[in-house]
Structure formats: structure tokens, C-alpha cells
Image 1 (tube, rainbow, N blue to C red):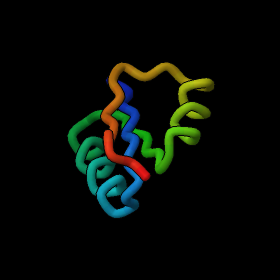
Image 2: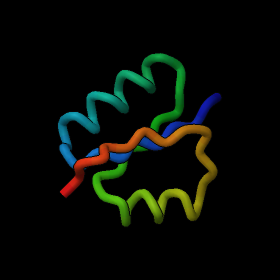
Image 3: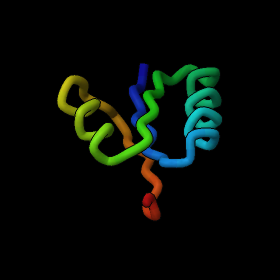
Image 4: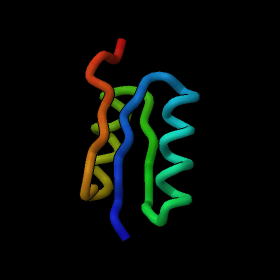
Length: 56
């Protein structure tokens, strides 16, 4: 199973993307900030990172 990290600061968009990916057979983890994503990557290896480039 592919592990995907979703980094998006808009909470509803993050939840929507993660839900779609999880229902499509992927293991998606959502993070709301770059620091949260860094912490997630410290503990787990991801196959793909989908990131918002205009985060606050």
C-alpha cells in the first residue's frame, strides 16, 4: 500500500483529499503545517508527498 503525506493548511481541503485517497486504497496522512509534516516524516517513510505551496 502506498503511503501518502498530504500537507495542506486548509483543514477541510486536507480532510477531503485524505478521505478520497484513503477510499481509493492509499494510506493518506494529513498535516496542517510544515512542522507537523516534518514530525510525521521523522517517524514514517512516505512514498509521495502532496504539498500546498502557498501555506501561511
